[in-house]
Image (cartoon, rainbow, N blue to C red; front, side, top):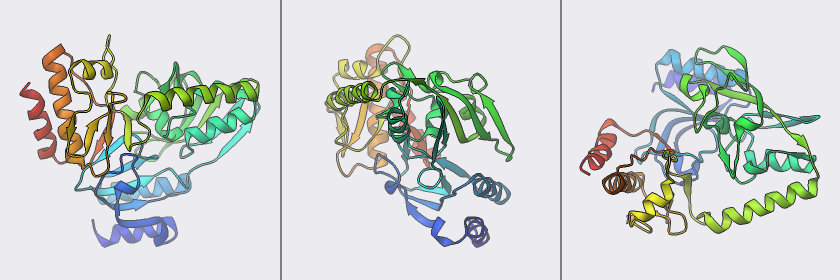
Length: 318
């Protein structure tokens, strides 16, 4: 990346405070893993975002839109491109009747609790999901029987070429861990969520119930990226991994959680290579034992073709 792009990004963002060079991605992912990003940008509005994306496209530099980093594994070598983080500066919530108007960088947890305090129910399922609203729409995040598809009515998105369009809930095509946003490379700027009137005390009680269930069943005491694998049709990934005898299996400091086998955790000093090797072994064993191909739910960023090939070769040996 040339000096010119750095200067352009700084001009777009109003100075060097919002454009960091060689920023360690371990600081920005819930896995606490990852080498440096070439440039790390913090836009605060749609104009900055659109200008930054346009600058990257003109320069021919790859870019990646990051939320809270809760569903991504970054290579130990980092990402030789531009990371544009929506979290932190791109947040905000406005309540109008039964609707929440939420900016893409707002945390789901904060939005759900604010809705609850306002006496709006329907978002309790999201009260423990650590991602942003934008990221939640990209993958149609869900838990405990609820999903974003149930509550989103429309979203303002930016197409790769910079055009802004409003899409209805139906036009977002939200499915299991999928959306038109992901398929077409759109960027979410804001969303309109429609909830129902409820009693704040009952909403809080439900959130507490879900929190206790999550704490009891998930390894929240360790860094991770949440559920590592998508749910295979007709199966549960965690049970397949457990039945394959892989509970607690380790590669370096990466481990299949003993509390919930669907989670790969960082016990402290895991590298991205450790995690990928562990994932490759889990996939190969589950395929060998049960004939089921596990698909990663966690996104990967910055991995070379050689790193990906190594993991695939490991799986294909099964």
